[in-house]
Image (cartoon, rainbow, N blue to C red; front, side, top):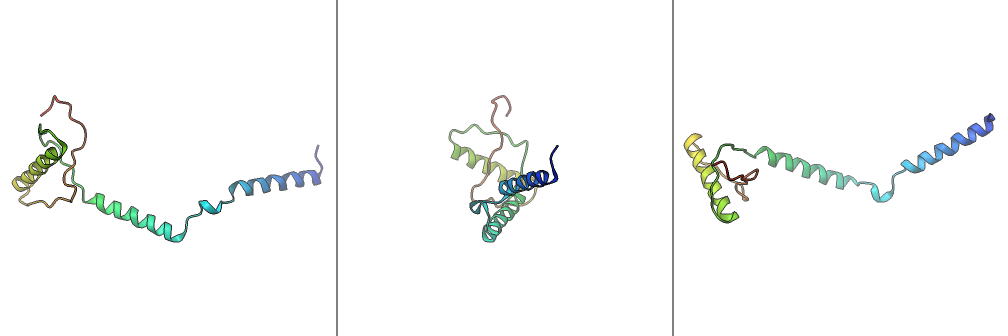
Length: 107
């Protein structure tokens, strides 16, 4: 059985060890400007993603080369918008991006 003095001494050692484990390292600290920058980047990313449009059912085209595929996809999307939505769409600089992979079985 421990005495009161031994018990208090053991508790203070454990307390000190816990403090040193959780004490932040200066290199791990984030400055306010870094935090603001990350928050701004996250907000810009959310705003950019809100403008994305996903279209399903657009037929795949068989053109050789990524640039030709992107141009064909862009033209098909613009045509779809003009015919079905009565508007001419404005695409971003990077244009259309096809999601998924071709399996060769579906059109």
